[in-house]
Length: 438
Ligand SMILES: Nc1ncnc2c1ncn2[C@@H]1O[C@H](COP(=O)(O)OP(=O)(O)OP(=O)(O)O)[C@@H](O)[C@H]1O
Ligand SMILES: [Mg+2]
Image 1 (tube, rainbow, N blue to C red):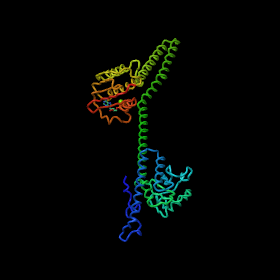
Image 2: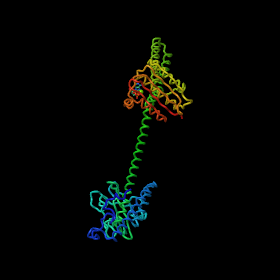
Image 3: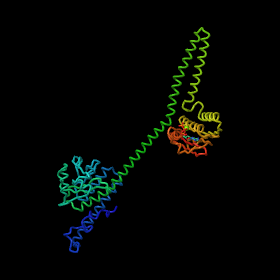
Image 4: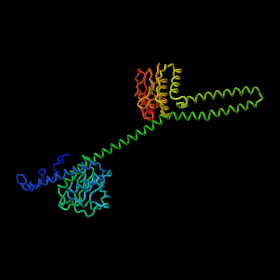
């Protein structure tokens, strides 16, 4: 870091010819002894500044927690400016200077820990002038205005003190204060404080940027988890609704009908009238028809779950055969599943194949469809392709209310795999997915 980036007026006396005019010769030059002393002071101050900078970067590299970082830095700065105590004071969001833990040289019960000094950009108090304008008047080894400020806020027994603005670029972070120097504070000490405050400002900015990044990453992860959860619900939502409807149909309506049939049977056997018995026969027939039609409804609304009694291969073969019969689309099938996919994987594969085939049936106008499966990389890769009209994938993937393609992708992802949908208008469509077999 360039020490030379400090404003010229902030450099130690002698560093840029800003020594007091009275000490200048008529030609504007310093006397040789004065020059030698100024050069010495400059050298000392620069050495101290480079120690401060070195300390900031080495503490930073050690990846300390912030309290430890500030406590080490405060101690180093105290040594450099001959102070018994040093504290970083941070500007809170409410515009108060509060302690940035940990300070150096203050006992655990010191009132500095509860310090709260108002420093609003608009007012003209010493704290505001210090933080926003970096104004400091050092006379007789101290800043009397600052000493009074500490006193006013309960920090008694401060012998002398100086403080500088702690900032990063235009951003005001707070102030860096040093207290109790045996020899009294000088402008050179203030200059060293400024170098330390400037270096710490950069660290602060860096930490803030890091924290913002962490927060952003966290939010992104939360959003992604929520989205995954949502899509998991979407992917199974239809199934869930259909399952509830199917079980109500099965357990409720169909059982009531069966009960009605039995009652009817009893009435008919009790009845003597031939005419009435023919009517009852007719009624029984109607009830059976209603029952049949409800059973058909049941088989269509049941979620497309895999019938484990026939197994995955057979279930896909059946589904493809139904499609051929209903649409006349020619079918190709080449299923080479690895051994024993788990029930969950089988069910997931079947749901995706069934959705892809339903899409072919509903949308593709294809003449041919092919379903292929093979073992790949510890999982199974499945492909459903047709030679139909095709579609623009990006346009069709996120259409409100149309969830089939999205659900296929999400099911594969939730199972730890992937799903690719490849299609172009006029070039057919291909759904390909891979899931691990766990
Ligand atoms: N094989 C295909 N051939 C042609 N177009 C297709 C094919 N598959 C999907 N599409 C197009 O992509 C759109 C989205 O498909 P998706 O499966 O997501 O929804 P959907 O089938 O319309 O409704 P659902 O939510 O009941 O599945 C379809 O509306 C259709 O326009
Ligand atoms: Mg669909």
